[in-house]
Image 1: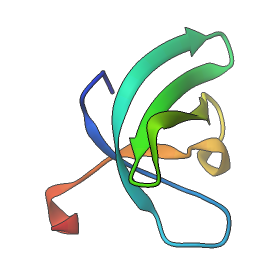
Image 2: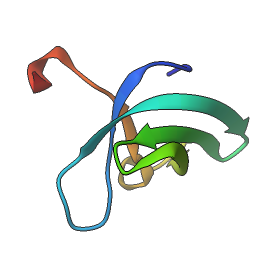
Image 3: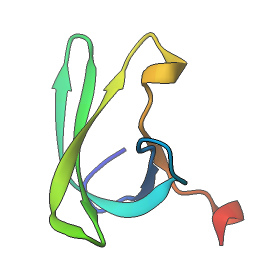
Image 4: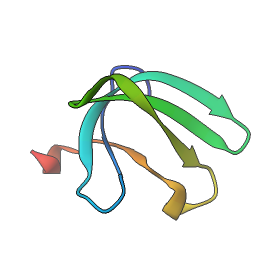
Length: 66
């Protein structure tokens, strides 16, 4: 994923939320995404772990979600 991609993010206990990637930082263990959400327009950081499906919080928004 890259800056300006439309994504959904997993948050505690609720449905996935839609946002836009503002910044991407790559680390050895995974990738951090700064995502602008409706109630957090300046962005919130989410981390996707490389080796764990449970640790994937940011996904590209698919056309099926329309």
